Structures are given as C-alpha cells and as structure tokens.
Length: 408
Image 1: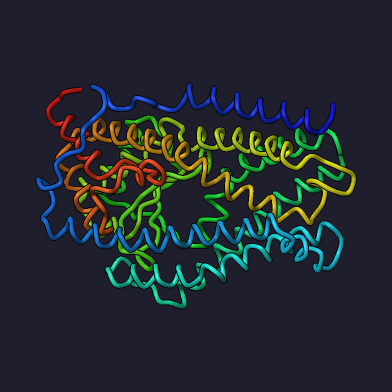
Image 2: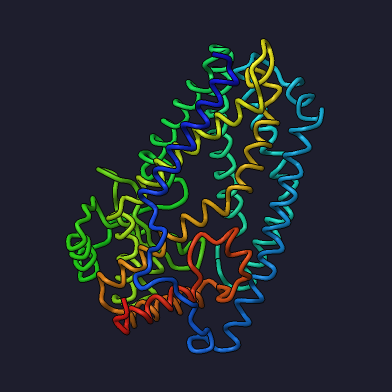
C-alpha cells in the first residue's frame, strides 16, 4: 500500500471515529424544553455595564483578531515560500536537531512579529482593571507558554518526521497512532506537570465550603482526589474554577479570588458546573475527540505531503509547511470545536442548576462573572459561532430562568 493510500485510510478512520464519538457523547440538544432565546440584558445589567463590556470587547477583538491574522500570514509565508525551507537549510545538525530548531525558529518569529498586539492587548486588560500582574511576571508567563508550545510541537514533529523516514509507506498509520497516544498521555499528565508551571496550588482548608464541595461531588457521583485553591489572583481579577484530570489525578480547582469574592451559594454554582463535566467524563470525551482528530489530521497531512525518498514529511525542510497547514486547519475547524464546546458547557449549566436547585444564585453568579470580566453580553452572532467556546451570558441566564419556572 502506498503512503497516500495509507494516509487516506488513516484519515477515514480518524473521521469515522470522530463522528461516532461526537454523535454518541456530545449533547447536541442539551437544554430540556428545546432551544432558548437569550434573556433580555436590560433586566440584569445597567446601560453603563453593557456599554463597558461592549467597549472592552470591541478593542479586545481588534487586538486578538489582528494578532491571529498576522500570525497566519507569517505561517503561510514561511510555509509556502522559499523562506521557510531556506531557514531550515541554514540550521545545523542532523534531522532530529533541525526539526526542533525549525519549530523554535518559526514559533519565535511568529511571536516577535505579533508581540505588539500582545502588548496592546495586555495594556487594554490593565486599563479595564482585569489584571494586576506586573509586566515582568506577564513576560515570564508568556515565555513559559512559548517554551511549552515549542517543546510539545517539536515532540510531535519529531514523531512525524521520524516515522516518515523510517516507514516510507506506513508512516501515516504509525505516526497517527503514536500522536493520538500522545494526546491521551498529555491529558493524564497535564494537571500534574503543566498546571503547576503557571499557578501554585494549596488544599482548600477544612471548613463549610470544602465540606459543601465534597458533599456536592458525592451527591453527583464524582470521585474527587482533592479540592485545591489556585493563586490566580496574581494574574487576573476574573473568577473561575475547574475540574482537571481523570482517575487518580482528578481534582476540583477553585481560584483564590472566587473563594474570597463570592458568597458560598454562588461558589457552589461554579463548582457544580465543573463537577458536571467530571460526571459526564467530558475531559475523557474531549481527549478521545482530540485523539481522533489527530488521526484525521495526520491522514490529511499524508495526502498533502506524500512521502518521496528524501522529501515530503520525511524532509525537515517541510516543517514550516506542516506548521502552516496546522495553523490553517485550526482556524477552519474552530466553529466545529467551539460548537461542541458550547453544547458541553450548556449541559454542565443544566446539571449545575439541577444539582443546586438555586437558579437565583446561578443568575447572580453570571452577573458577577460578566461584571468582573467586562464581558460582552450581546456579542456578534458570527463571532460567537466561530470563536465562542461557552454560551453567552444571556443564554446562560435564560437557562436559569427556565429552570426557575420549572419548564423543563
């Protein structure tokens, strides 16, 4: 079987696996009673609060979308002109050294060119009081993120190029399987390896809140290893909590400003939402979807970069092109990924409202979250469709309104 035929089979298997998982485990109609019309923002927010969120979102979109557009142009120029191949050709060493050096070079070039947008966005966040983090600490976090991206991407590309050099015909199947396995391993180790790079964690002290959280987890049938507090307030004023990991690494994590800034009922609404993710094994489902998507992506890459002796995916000179194709694919698949995410998040809201039986606290929570983050409560429909990973504030409040009336 030729490499192209192998790649076609791998792509079809990945697509079929993704479709089966999505149809089986994604809640495509998560709200009992049917779709919801967003609640009227005038009932819950003042005109000044709505305008404040609109103003912040307008410039946030300018800086983030400009950065995205410029980074995509840079990736395409390096990937589909002679510049990228020429750059890799100047790198020293054998292929296994050239690959990570090429990844680092492309990543650093993209970061340097888009740095003005990151700085502008950072100033915008500071102007609106959404963070108190010093510029030095911000730069350290930015460097950590960039370094992590380089390491993870380099490992993936080393697998890809190494398999293509070793198995000229079967490499799409071998590389796809290995990289899909990496996605699973990454989900397992993320809570204990990556999260501590950006936050410090301490166990939530014994007290009413910890007791309520563990009791809620027990009622929802979710085994939790620990309840941790993250020192997120050093970076942001926004509130959040999450459940990360699965199996022995699962833990409830609450931001310190969430514990200090909300009353207990509202905090429990946040935690109930996150426990719903654990109850439905959303991390595991997301991991499986990611693994299937990786298999599909490697198969498509094999069709676009057929292996030739000394060329194709086996050639380190094509690393910039691979990165450009990945960047384009990420942008084009955003509506699908975010559409799935919104439905999963909506189901978690529905479960949280059922578990706490407290729609009023849920609505108060959404109001506070929107105020703290200067949220745009009425974002453009197309922007929400393409980039929105969560339901809008007014959609979430509408869900609580329906729960309050018992119209489920």
